[in-house]
Image (cartoon, rainbow, N blue to C red; front, side, top):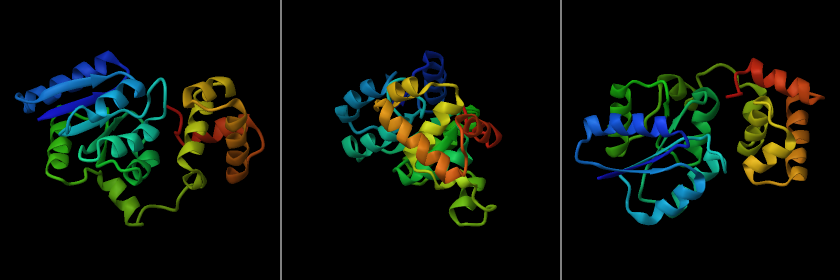
Length: 206
C-alpha cells in the first residue's frame, strides 16, 4: 500500500506523513511539492490514496484533481486543504475527489477519513452532506461561479494582481480579465474593490 502526498509545504507533508505512518506503519509514502511533480508521479503505481492540497504554486489543485482522475483513475483522491469546505467541498466531489479533509483535522480524523476512502466510501462532513441533499440554507451568489471563476475570485481576494493571478493559473492576463468581468456580472458588483470585499465577507480568501 502506497500513499502520495501533494503539498508545497514541507512541514505539512512531514506532519501528514507521520500521521499516516502511525496508523499504517507498513505503507509506503511518496511526495510531490507541485502540480508538475504530481503529474509525473500519478502513473507510477496504483496509489492507495492520493492526498491533495488545493493550493499549489504552479496550478490550481482542482485542475490537478482532474488530471489525477485521468492519469491515475484507480487511485482515489482525498483533498486535504485549508480552504473552506462549504465553498469547495461540493466542487471537489464533482471533480472526482472521494472526500474533503480540513488541515485542522486531528490525527484520529485523518485516520478515519483515509480508512473510509480505502474502503471505497466517500468522506464528507455532516454540513457538506446537508449541502448535497439540499437541506442547507439558500446558496450564496458565488456558488453559481464556475470552478475557474471561483479560483480567480480567491486569488484577487488574496491580494494578487491580474498578472500574478494569470501566472498562478497558467492563463493569459486577458483571460483573467475576462473572468473578472464575468465574476462581477454574476455577483452584481462593479469594481475589484467590491469583489474583494465580497470575498472577505464570505470567507473565500485563503
